Amino acid sequence: MSAWVALQDVGEWNGSLRIQVGSQKRPVLKKSHFRPDPDGDPGPWQGWSHDDAFDELSERNQLPEVTIEAKKGDVVFFDGRLIHRGGPILDHDAFRHSWAGHYIPRSFDSWPYEDNPRLRVSFDGVCRFTPTS
Image: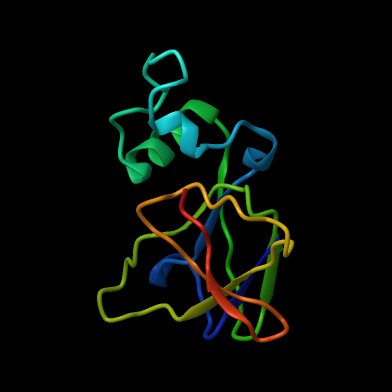
């Protein structure tokens, strides 16, 4: 579960949140997709950067992308598997400030992006890095 909070009014002009409707129901990218399988055959996304793979997956989904306009203080909750991104900032004098929180079970240990480990802070205040292997 993700919570995205607009810390100021956001819209097309300052790169608001964009979501791909229904993408949470489609296959997701996994760590194993970027490396050879147990038989040594290349994974389906081996050789791709994560960013390029997400862009390509978005294209392949052929699902509509919607821009979320929000007022300062609005919160948008969505499935963490939903393809989402910040849009381009069209007004070069504008900026977008937002905050995102991701809520995951304490027992969840598999972060799929080895090259980008994440610091996890539990509600009990314990900090730890998500294992990368």
